[in-house]
Image 1 (cartoon, rainbow, N blue to C red):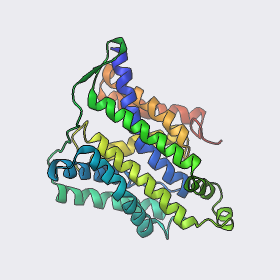
Image 2 (tube, helix red, strand yellow):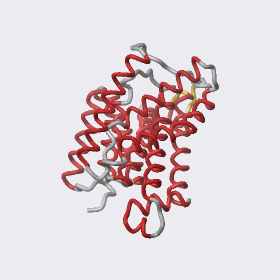
Image 3 (cartoon, rainbow, N blue to C red):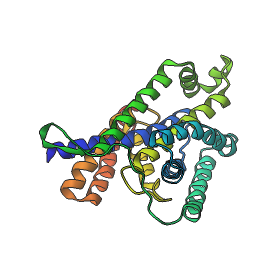
Image 4 (cartoon, rainbow, N blue to C red):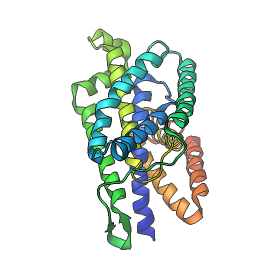
Length: 283
């Protein structure tokens, strides 16, 4: 029982990590809260459904399609919505709230009210030490999410693009004086964050049914994660994602699903009382 809940918590944490890391990247670079982040999660889930179940593409080909398409969607969104108002916090916040409400409403009209799910190519059960049994699709989703995060760490920490993103995050004016095009770097960072949200949606669509409002709960969890981990701190978000995943798993199994949600909010309040900047945030 304990091992089963622990493994489920790690799976949930991997999903939260993927959604929150995109939100953390966007906040770290732009210092703006993207309230429309859940929209891209939903669009990624829906795109995966239509690519696999309607067009007949293999599942992993559908994920590759997300990687190819959503960077352009993210860059276009940043250019159209954020570019001119990203230095005005309230304007950016309200603009993304408007996009969130608009896209979710359009989603109900375009995609319909029917719950949709995607078949994962690997089926069966995996027996783990301690008597835990995990569906194969959950194990694969967990491993894919971790692999994606390793790739993000490499991209941000070891590539020229990553150095540009970190420079713009630390001091945009100094970055420009060093020859870095801040607008272009911000656009690329935003595109990466959006793509991570879409990939999370594509993965989750194989675990749970999705509809046009399916991005709201993951976005809420992502906000809890980035507050716990420290705003703009990717490593802190990863740690916080697994903490929240374990809390949701143990709390939901022992006390009920709603209790698990409340425990997450309680943890946010408790940590912010003693460490206002989050687990790894700068005081």
